[in-house]
Image (cartoon, rainbow, N blue to C red):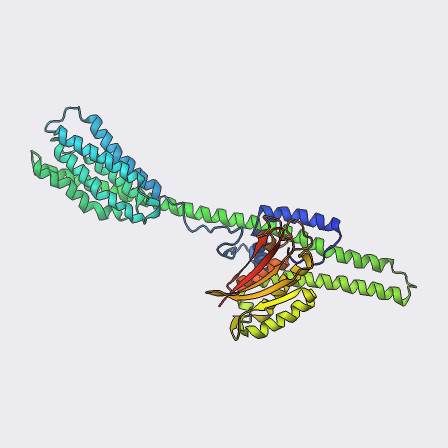
Amino acid sequence: MPMTVGSRGEGEQAVGRTWWQQSAAARPGHLYRALSTGVRLLPGIGGMGTVHIPPVLAGQAGAVPRVDGLPDRRGLFGRLAAVFVAGAGVMGLVTLPLPAPGSDAVAMSAVCAVALALGAGIWFVPWDRWPRRASLSVVPPAFALIAMGNAFGGQDLHTYSVFFVVAFVWIGMAHPPGTSAAVAPLAAAAYILPLFVLPGSVGAGLASAALTIPVCVLVGEGIAWGVGRLERIERALAREQERAAQLRELDQMKDRFLSAASHELRTPITICRGHLEVLADEADAREVGTVKTMCISELALMGRLVDDLATLAWADNQALLKVESLPLDRFLRDMAAKAQAILGDRARVVSGIGGATLHADPQRLAQALVNLLQNAADHGKGDGPVCLRLSAGPANWCFEVADDGGGLPPGDEQVIFEPFSTGSSRGGMGLGLAIVRAIARAHGGEAGAVNRPGHGVTFWVRIPR
């Protein structure tokens, strides 16, 4: 039910409605950004400057999320840790029958079983909902299992060095640079402590640890540096892809805007030109007066269209609002007079607010409510009352314009607030409700509709208190 500007014959309305309805349904939310962004920033594009697309408010239809980072890999890295731990347990069980001097088969079976159970538990932990550093909790039990395996696995001091390498590979992949160096002392303790319960020379084991742990740290830090650099490249690529997509979208929206605007402006120009061309030189004063009145009306229509486009392009700019302390009683009296002029005896104004004030731009807010009232007058079916209500919420004032007409076609509740979208059965440019929402958002509020198909619709505007 958006307010229409300059409705024409049914044939012209059908052409504009079909084309813009399809585009709005296919790409909701983009036309508003195209209009406002294109008006403000097209000069910057010519200079190849950075293109800024205004952030989309939460809940806005067609909102396109910004690229703030890479896809979340915390869950992936957590499950990779589960695979490594459980895989180590499986390898231990598979190699258990192989000869290993000094090995304790029962103890090793227990260590491998614990590794399998730990790996299964790690798999089901919701790492993607926890901070990245939370997965470091896997490292101490993993090192402890490696130490236990080294203590009961036999006399070969180098057998379990490879498990430390695997652990540091995961640390380098899953955590930022510096993490491998930070956990190196814990790894050294896990490597050295079993040496005191193993037969043979502790000195030889210390020499092995002095070589193995630094190599593990180098591996972990090298992988962390490479993964970090890859993430930065991916992030830059994602930003460039988003910027390119925004430029393509802006270009498409520019073409659509120009097509719709030229269509609406061409009609009154054609009418004025046609009448002036057929006006005879010897036409009498009555005929000249008729043509003059018609031309003035068409030019006024063009002026309203241009004003609506300018309003839509700048309405969401808070810097242009002239906010003042607005007594609601006086404001509602003024709105009641406007509603009476638009709707006649159908107008009803209901408010239980007395003596309160609202901080808002009175002209912009009145413009939004007049658009809703005019919308009800133009598109509300029947002759039932149209009610303008004001209520106080916990954090905002809520203005409502409700009618008892036929309501909106199901699915049009959000579409009708998009610029150039006229819903499923409306004509004209469809800027009225887009202006309403832009004004509401400029005040830090929101606008919407509660649809009752077959019974009417209630449009609302919420302004923060």
